Length: 330
Length: 248
Image (cartoon, rainbow over all chains, first blue to last red; front, top):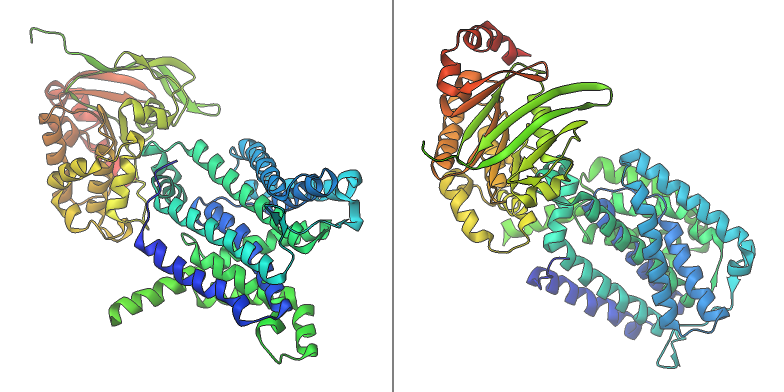
């Protein structure tokens, strides 16, 4: 991997984000709000991986919910059934999803575009069946319950605020790592890969190695998110890791725009919050929320279509235009 | 010449193609150190395929390719770049949304080193317009500037052998002149160059030696000046056929 550079453009937005994000539990004791935002953080971690894979390296995966699931079940199993410490569960989830990502990436590298998407779709469906049928490990269709809260140095993190801080702490680390990665030599090669594969080959970029590495990183991030989710929620079931979730993750990456981390992160926040709109909009009536939840898929679909039509380049494109306007005004 | 110049590239009996279609049928070709060798011929003669086979983008079905005594037959393209071959691909294959400078830095990718400032200076000296445009994206450049960037990007890899695929394609005569002046300068500095061109007259004027390809084989080979004067070459490649090739 290339050397990571610390850049002022990375530090300032991250510091602002950190202050804003970490202040929430001090301002509000609303457990529901904190839980929703914790869930948002989990999705931000997965979507960051999708942004690297899709937005920077130009690879499509319709199987990332499976890595999310593998991470969740791995950590749930080794911590709950085998009694490993929580951190070891997280490590096991990352290792297993990295290996899974490597195994899926190697044959998939011969494929491009739609065919790669189909291969990852197949992987996702295979894993969904495994989650349902491997009852001894996963609890089958009834799900896996009684997963303990995360604990560090023997102290259980069982409050809504504690979990919120834990997840967003990880989000910060993941975003800092990814921001450095895309600015590094490897990140430049990733953007080149998206721009022109034959150009990248002419530059002597090892396409195979690069694609495998990005695939493994994105799978590991989904696995990490899964391990966090399982312990924060305490219960997991196969429906959480279905094709529907994979599609939603791709939608977040597409909506966010390419060659950007901020865009997909915003998209993840937006789309994850829609079904829980009452947590962020005080006074939203029960019936209005139910309508939103019933029409959730349509709201997603319409949002994506609207963005495609009115905001070319996704949220990242909009962010670039706003910052260009700011530069001109300043 | 009293000494035998070192052979940089040696292609022996190479066959290559796509699936069942054989495009290159038994090519022997040599490029010595410091030479500018051109490969000319009509559309579909197999020039580009041979170039792609040399850099590893197409796998040969038979034959061997040696580069500075190293067997590079079927070597992966990224390894070939590391070994010292740099290709300026047909159609340039630049990274449109990235800046001129980023494109150039990607050219130095295979070297794994961060001393690209010196190389940047060198290519900006060769093509000053690129320095003016260094923070513009490649997509905003004119066709000629893009071709200059493609050549400059390949030079960033510090190649021992520069391979160019149709650098004059679709460019105005004035720009073509500039690019060939740059090639002359690179050759004068000692760089070894293999140039694939459809504009045979132009290529032979700048080259030391030439190979004429026809339907996958070498039809003629010799000194560039002799080829320019050769009746067959004049009739077939520098005459009416040349004009036809341009339009297709």
